[in-house]
Amino acid sequence: MSAVSNKKKIAELARQIADHQARLQVIGANWGEEINDALDATEKKFLEKLQKELKNFDFVPNQKKTLEQLEKINEKLIKIRAQAWIEAQASVTYECKNLAENEAKWAKRVSKEMTGEKKLNEPEQLQLNFVVENTLSSGRTLQQWFDKVAADDASRIETIIRQGVSSGWTIDQIADNIAGTAKNGYKDGVFNTTRREAVNMARTVCNGIANSAKLAFYQANDDVIIGVEILATLDGRTCPVCASLDRKRYKMDETPPSLPLHNMCRCVLLPVTPASDFADEQRPMAKADFMAEAQRSYEAKNKGEKFSDLDAEQKKKLYYQALREYEKRTGA
Image 1: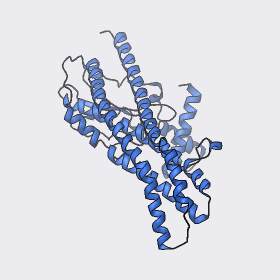
Image 2 (image 1 turned 90 degrees about the horizontal axis):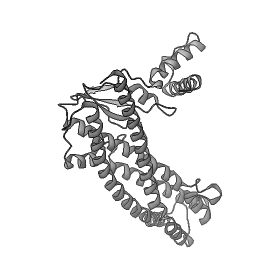
Image 3 (image 1 turned 180 degrees about the vertical axis):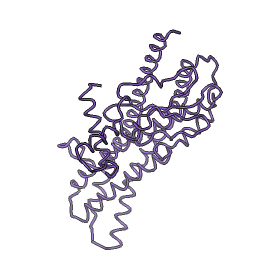
Image 4 (image 1 turned 90 degrees about the vertical axis):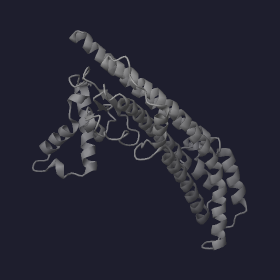
């Protein structure tokens, strides 16, 4: 194959990879919406129960009986939400299994293009099920993620109710602080915080399971695939951690960092093969080391001060500033 046609093939493959990652973001966001639809369906029943339970509730500060009553009220309300969480988890878990199968097939298709090999092994179904159940997405399994967001949801609701009754709020004020107000598009209640957490969880889990399924495929074909490579999504939202690991390679007998690297990470794990090498195909933004740019700019403006003495947040701020300046300067 000529250098020109090989370059075109690599460019086309890079486009396919980018498109695939974009679709994964959509899948994760859709899962988040599914979870929120299940939770939103409980809202009417929840608010009716809240009105009923608090209507005849008399709050007496620091009285044990009052606190016990309040705890029972919270338990009844959380039970309404709990069923929605169970249903949402069952739905997402089913879709995670389909995702794992599809990602292994996608990895097979990409690997065929990169190696020219016709016969490649697919991971066994038991292995893919293990991926779904045990993948750590930003430090948590699928079950642990659902446990966390459901517990956080319950805690926020309980906090508002306790705060409301002890502060003398009306039932409508308590309801508004939980569900939000029409005036503000229902974005000012704690339910909306849960909605954002659900999308965050879904997108993070989607990335984690997708990459773990791909890794399972690469490991099943370690006679052909000699290693894996982290490919970061390079744009104005890329974090310093992902940017620093972009194009980082690991041999098959090494353990690569668990993807996602953080919540809503968009990095992807690709195969490294003798037949195809992306090393000389630098993407435009990969030509700039934004952390190095940030250091150079900072020390030029602040004579005698060291970039290394700054804390992580200051470095991160300057990193993004350097990235924006690069985009403005180059249009890339």
